[in-house]
Image 1 (cartoon, one colour):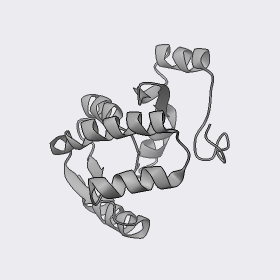
Image 2 (cartoon, one colour; image 1 turned 30 degrees about the vertical axis):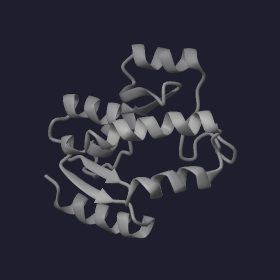
Image 3 (cartoon, one colour; image 1 turned 180 degrees about the vertical axis):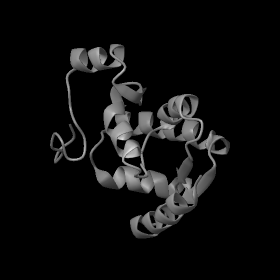
Image 4 (cartoon, one colour; image 1 turned 90 degrees about the horizontal axis):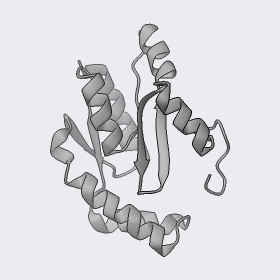
Length: 145
């Protein structure tokens, strides 16, 4: 957990062995080791329940996660969230003040890799500000297949 994060809002935090057990039991829709260090995953049960209830589901994942979901849910609609510029991405990361220099360098390398895969997505939304992105995503969710 980073400073200020709380288990269950919005993330759930588990130890390594518990996470590995969940992988083995197929409990994740997708999972990945991100930035070469951290494990993240999306619980399959929560997505399945929402879809069974007829609700749209918006999932924020990295490139590895998107690729896994694409392989198991080919009908999903994929949105690439792009920074307005590389300089702005760096400014935002540094401005958070939650990562040391080594971690920032690792995250920026991940960002370079992800930006190179933009063409794998159905549409790109430029993350100028949270409000605009949210409005655009709501429109896209209403029009996606």
